Length: 128
Image 1 (cartoon, helix red, strand yellow):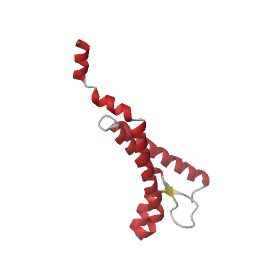
Image 2 (cartoon, rainbow, N blue to C red):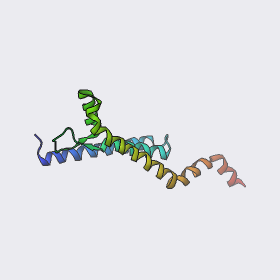
Image 3 (cartoon, helix red, strand yellow):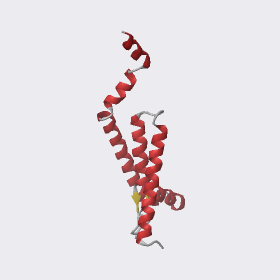
Image 4 (cartoon, one colour):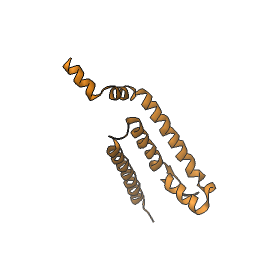
C-alpha cells in the first residue's frame, strides 16, 4: 500500500517524466514542424498525459485519466470508462482552443516573416 509520501513522489515522477517526454518531442520536431503544430502537440500531449481521474468509485487517490480510461475500457467496457473519457475530451478541446487562440494572436506575425523571407531574395537585396 502506498503511503502519502510515496503517492506524492509517484505523481511527481509521472508528471516530470511526461513533461520531459513532451519537451523532448517538441525539441526533436522543431525544425520539421511549424510552431502552431508544435504548440498543439505539446498542449494536446499535456492534456492526454496529465489529466487526472479517479480509478473507481470510493477511491481518494488520482491516476492519469488516459491510463484509467484504457484499463476500464479493456476490462469493463466503454460505459464504465466514461468518467475518465469526459475530462480527457474536455482537456483536449481546451488544448485545441488554446492552440488556435495563441496561433492567431501571438504566433501570427512570426509565420509570415518565415515564409516571405528566402535566401535568394536576401542576396538580391544586398547586391542592390
